[in-house]
Length: 429
Ligand SMILES: C[S@@+](CC[C@H](N)C(=O)[O-])C[C@H]1O[C@@H](n2cnc3c(N)ncnc32)[C@H](O)[C@@H]1O
Image (cartoon, rainbow, N blue to C red; front, side):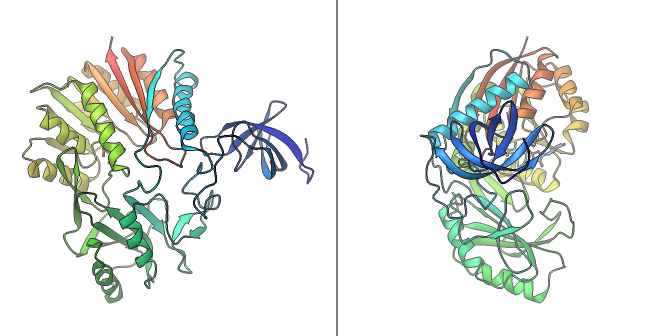
């Protein structure tokens, strides 16, 4: 097959991990954006590589019964959502299948059952945080798919209502000197934290801008930080509070949680609560039980475990998150040992635990971490993951170190996107 303007008729057989339709042409894979499994389409080949090609959609000849009209006018252009054109029930089935297939294909597990996928209470307006870049021309929004071009958006359907109202107010201000905006809202407080990121030290203009934002009724605190880096990591290492205390308070399953601008916190609050409940239930925590919470963020799970009587050692690399975790334990009258540093290093020198919780970033755990955890011989390992591929890889490794996959459950934390969260219980054989 050659690159040409000629149209070809194809059938979509799957969705890629980034949400493109995967079409089959006599065994050769062609990726076409905007197409759903089962659909018959006409497209033209616009890129041809040895193992795969890229097609541009001309026409959908036979639409999928699972297709729906996306509510957002930016869908297709904005990189925030990938599958808003797919009905929510079909999104859930697709994500459950993705987890099962990852375990089979990458982990080599033949007979894994994903118990269920927990749907989100709301398929829109579930995000308690947005983080957006500003273009030089003043546009504020998400990156266009696979580019560094910014799609200027007025509002985001995934963003919770109060935070989004605040966003529409902030975007009308003169944001000169700002490269990124982050809004994090608390359900319990009904207020938001605003982080402005710039490339230069704070100026009089920036302080005035922060104060102007601080006057909006939705705002509890405004912080500013500098990031001159060219990398994709946009959050500043240090921030300064210009208005208010520099953090907001949230509640998770009865625990008071202090959230700073740069600390990790789950963006879908009600789904996060369901995930923590499952993780706690599977742990069967008893009074005095030694437990490790690795990759602990601001220590939400650590506090919930301590509340159930566990003797918790939390490990987290970001200092501010560790300070938040210690403060969170104190505020809730709980005891907790929160260690700052990499899990890779700290896990080597701590006392063995009965249950180990792992919740690494997308890249999963280093082999040295899995080795050290297995050497501790905990009766259970409970691994929460945001990437089924790295979870399946690590599950394979743990199964070679004396652990059996006992339960797998998926959670839809990010409706309209391809992301899926999974909890896996490993039991010592
Ligand atoms: C997916 S988040 C989980 C946070 C927490 N468990 C929660 O539920 O809120 C991953 C956390 O791991 C931290 N992290 C990333 N790499 C790490 C490493 N090598 N050692 C320790 N912590 C790490 C990140 O800063 C982040 O807070």
